[in-house]
Amino acid sequence: MPDTAITDLDALESRISADIAAAADLAALDAIRVSALGKKGEVSLKMRELGKMSPEERQTMGPALNGLRDRLNTALEARKASLEDDALNLALARETVDVTRPAAHRRPGKLHPVSQVMEELAVIFADMGFKVAEGPDVEDDFHNFTALNFPPDHPARDTHDTFFMEAADGDTPKVLRTHTSPVQIRTMMSEQPPIRIIAPGRVYRCDWDQTHTPMFHQVEGLVIDKETHMGHLKGCLEQFVAAFFETSDVEARFRPHHFPFTEPSAEMDVRYERVGDAVKVGSGDKWMEILGCGMVHPNVIEACGLDPEEYQGFAFGMGVDRLAMLKYGMSDLRPFFEPDTRWSAHYGFSPLLQANLATGLS
Ligand code: DAH
Image 1 (cartoon, rainbow, N blue to C red):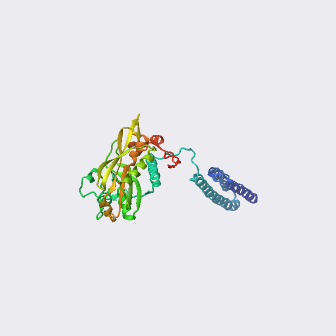
Image 2 (cartoon, rainbow, N blue to C red):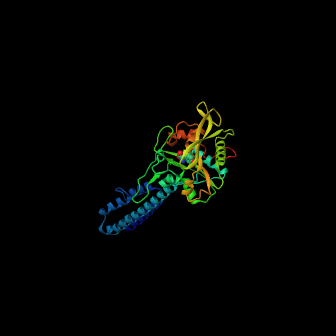
Image 3 (cartoon, helix red, strand yellow):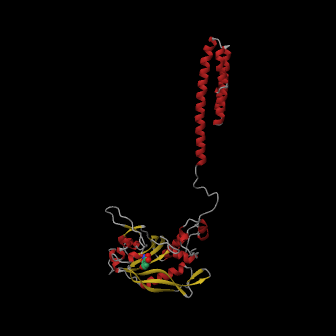
């Protein structure tokens, strides 16, 4: 009888082992464990019968059943580990992100009007031989004021509503740049004339209302050469305004003004008229100031290590946000900096259409 019992055990073992190997998932595997080794499992029931056996029978069947139980346990563990590995690999494969895959819902974002205008500026001035220069947002007093011929303690420093930053021990105090003009200084100190740059970027002033935000955007322009004069400045800026507002009949005027870093200095006005809510730039009976400009002050050229007897040039600066408001008809500056997608869907630009002079800027 023990022989047939052992043969039965062998058959049982091969059946259960085959089931284990074929278990498709962890739930199926656990069901096999319960039906073999659970309280009422086939192997457990057989072990319970040991008590009723004769001592001789028990001597063969005991170790045989124990061995069977141990081998099944080992097989169950191994299959469990392999199923868990498979599950993990499957999850990893399913969760990989294919960054090259096109978006399921084609809702491309919009280019912010400030980015659009900055691109338009770069295109217009590149056509006139200017390159784009950059400088840091966190500036020092020298580049933001002193080298630009702001006298120490002069009230002009206050009119800029400067954000002063605390200096670390032994460090020179820093400011958030109040204008893009410090890029003039950085360029003149690092490059030899002839220089033709524009410098678009963020600037900061402590101010907040419908037309002022503590961070806004300017673009600076600088030309330094040996024979540059006011006529070049006027021609360059008139060409810019016509290109930017996409009209041929822009009438502009230059009004004397004061900036510490230019002499003479001027503000440029353009004619405009209101058509309904919109502002039409170029013609009309009103004048609107759009930028500051002038011939670079000899003190500024000298502060940058160039000889003002040899070199001269002109500079200009204007608000990019304001240009965007004028051209695209927004009346409030604050939403420019609020994350409202309805605003950007309305005022934004297609990111796929590159501004260019041949087929139109916008
Ligand atoms: N930096 C001036 C400002 O923020 C703007 C400006 C005026 C820049 C005249 C210039 C300039 O380069 O020539 O108000």
